[in-house]
Length: 356
Ligand SMILES: C[S@@+](CC[C@H](N)C(=O)[O-])C[C@H]1O[C@@H](n2cnc3c(N)ncnc32)[C@H](O)[C@@H]1O
Image 1 (cartoon, protein in one colour):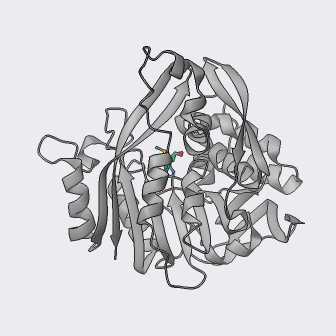
Image 2: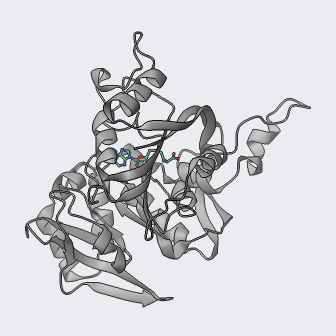
């Protein structure tokens, strides 16, 4: 994590200032000072401590719960720790879990690398299966969403502006955000996605990743990635309803395809509103893919029931409850994900730009 960003971050539990404990491993390359491994501590409550490992800051209120919910990750993260302080922190703040389960989001980074940085037109099987004379009609991954966000973003007039991309995954939209703000911060609860986002940011022109073919079969694919402002983009592990950010400090916030994946969509919106400053812009988009396996109870959905369509309910919350003014809307922006050679999903995102 870029060390200078610590000033912009706050304790996710109590929102106090943070400091790095001594014995941290810090590197300096290309004029960037990176906290590679160490413990970040809350200045008000010393029991609020957070791990940084392999450059990834895990700024979640309950570290133990976080790792317990992701037993697969505990060993992976422990293996990455290269200092005694790091391993001691993990051992002391988590319990080994005998039977590993998987956290769904931890297994989806390649889908998002593909959507954010790769292109569907190179996928031979998809192109070949089209009947003769029919051109593939799927939209290009997240390109339409990226173009929509880019067109909706209004650069803030403040110096040292801060933008956050909540649920950034591997960071495609965080880089779009960085074209409008001084510092763009991607926040996601998936450790692997944030680690990958940092690797993509630091890739020098080319990035190689494993594209799923079927089951556990994968193929290495090298793609070109040229991110516009690597020195001004950072990614941290954090929860959408406990952002490690000071209130009223964010100029632009993105919540793209998040509302239907969090356990409390309303809390996510009020938490986003908390961090936005008085003239802050929010760009929110969602395909309202509610289902019985959604983490939110049906009663917590924003719309999605026979009585209230989601489009209407979200606009009501934004304008009547959060007092935002809607400045632009694009109710049907396509995006698609690739799961493997023979499975894609197409979603249609309702995108809204609004301002406090
Ligand atoms: C549907 S993806 C959207 C990714 C990206 N915003 C986009 O539009 O392509 C949802 C992302 O949110 C993350 N996520 C899910 N629940 C979260 C939570 N409670 N807090 C933070 N991130 C969360 C997942 O790890 C995943 O990367």
